[in-house]
Image (tube, rainbow, N blue to C red; front, side, top):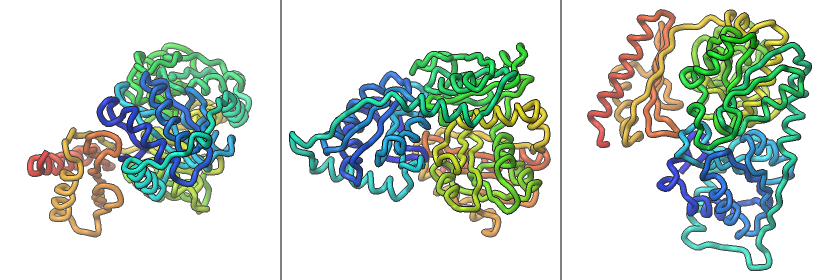
Length: 446
């Protein structure tokens, strides 16, 4: 049921009102009495929230509804409302036909594996034999409109005085408009692109990557803007464009954030598909990386350790553990704007990070588990055990580079990543990874 970031899939097949009702009943059967619920702007969000809330209230749980709000706003509101859990109805960066559910604890961390397993068991039990509250003990439902205002004030305070800074924010028709508001509060001159929430995401695909942010890059390049910022549909992710209109790779942002937060002896939590550039840049401040499975829940779990000062994913999820264990795209936007204001330019900062040729690709597959089982067998037959890391998929670490093959946790894809200090070698490693996946697809039943 769960992927690397909650439950999600196409509406009408994998996700529907019945699933929302069962998830509500299941969550209500665990140790919760009060739950905060919000959603992104997807067209199917309101009906899924209604069904989820009904399931919770049927089990006697009180529901606090935030309406449409950024995922980090909802995650933070769990503690602000003295609740036991939070749920966001969202498919994050997925296409508009998809929807799903993300579950949060009062610390801002997504449900970990133990909590997810407990929820799945409760959903199954409630499906087989619902245990509902009596007519006079159903949960109450209230509306709270103060979450975004509180988040906005917190964001503006984190940014400090940004007077003189010109910033373009591509909201992506999502729920991240709080970023533009908070930057304005902090004194920046702000323009928005795709600022109207629209769950069809007509302005651009929801995922903020180099291809989808072409309009942002062009706009920043053609104006005197100092910085471009972008979010996905629920604003847990944040990506950036420098003052020349150049897209900043997520690995570079990860290196910059890590070096700004971590110090001598600190560690920075990163997933297994992160560039060597991050570890090299952190070494300059005496810090190191600790690798996790891909997924903000795993990065957040590592961030709970006392010597881990920061965590992030190249896809745009940034976790500042002294602030919250939720990947907060608007908060990351404030911190980046502060770095730019202090340093003078994002381009200058990124030029300090030495990067290496890194290639990424993906394969559509029918049975991810079967393909990955064959991939692992083939890799172990071709490479020595001491160069293989199987924390998430299969990563092969060689003297001059590495490659990774892993199943996507949110889509029917197997992803391949390769990196080396020389371009030709990176191409060779990516070709090797692709060949392994192609061979596994041919030998695995789809």
